Image (cartoon, rainbow, N blue to C red; front, side, top):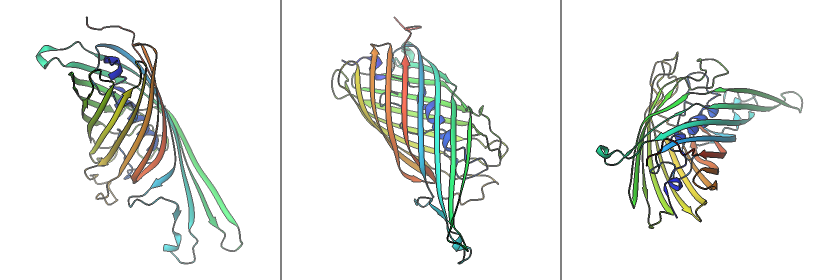
Length: 346
């Protein structure tokens, strides 16, 4: 049942789509702040996307929508009010309702080489991914009147859109076997998206990221219709543009199970945990850098090949949990893969 296409639906896109999601959740963090959540977000692609690929050229189009009305502070508490009574006992607390809605789209071109004998029959992988993102962040506040029995409500919102940071995969290597696959990649996020510290219309994150990944797969049955996945991703960042702030390094652990029910139909579960593992550094760090953000996510996906071995459609739904100093949201993903059968090996 299983062939190479069933094990690869967009290796290079993983970095790209995850960056777009983080771009949309960072639009409220336009000053130097502890809300630099990194470029990578776990779980947006299907379970087998980092498995050993076939050779050739691929075109991919990834789209996602994310929504959230919950921000979780560094202590794990939902941000629901501003306690003005802490400043003076006569002041009423202000109720707060944050909101986030974002959409991203990413066309990608990727190529996997024929097997290279001196690298142990590994395939060499390269790719490039521009992306477009739009996001809207709102904040609704309510407070009781001081003299009259009334409630004052105010809503503040901002909407931004544009091209985000460019994703480049200059080096990827993948080895395939009868029972196991292993893939490693080096990815660069270039700060080409609009960014200026202090601006209210930023799209990019304003810094370079160097990302290193390793993913392993185990196939318990001969036809590889069942797959178990485990992966690690490490990010290290440059200073933020026009700011003496270097966001801390990040580590992501991902795992998943994929099952083909027929030659065209696949279901899967994908989980991941994303942690900040080193302190933010620089003269502009005015917060306590010992508090590190984190977030976990769980996704469910369904994939279908309407044109066998040429076109795949993948739908995913996921939700966040265990957040600290991050938005907690729901995500919907629709991905397309097209194989033109070009530049393939014999």
